[in-house]
Image 1 (cartoon, one colour):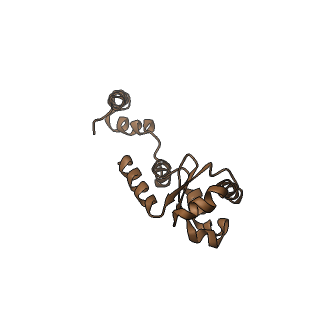
Image 2 (cartoon, helix red, strand yellow):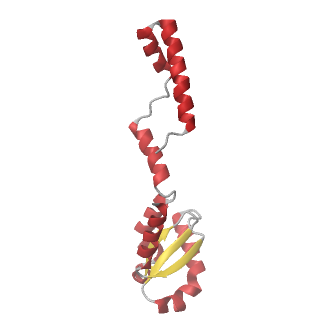
Image 3 (cartoon, one colour):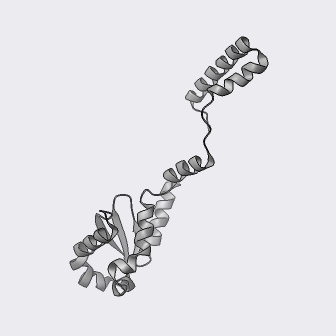
Length: 150
């Protein structure tokens, strides 16, 4: 991976400063004085938080809570036919259905009610849209998303 030009400028400026400090304080003290001009050291905890913020989906906590409370939010009978799949960053909720006849009969009529129930149970407007996918298709969708990321 090539080094960005800004890095060259930072290194050149640091070398100039180090040379000036050596001339001013002498060789030994000049090398110590340069450390006062270093960037602050980050703790491992700070680095982990930065990495996780960029690596994980922004709504991961909501996804985990929704998956854990799915049966409680919708009812055990409904959860037996419709599984939580995922929730993307745009608020689109993907639900797996076991049989397409169930989609035509029940879900098409009650998707607005389901949307309102999910948002009221979660305490915020987590979900803006619901998309139903046949059972087993969500893993295909997730794998294609992973390929796009790589």
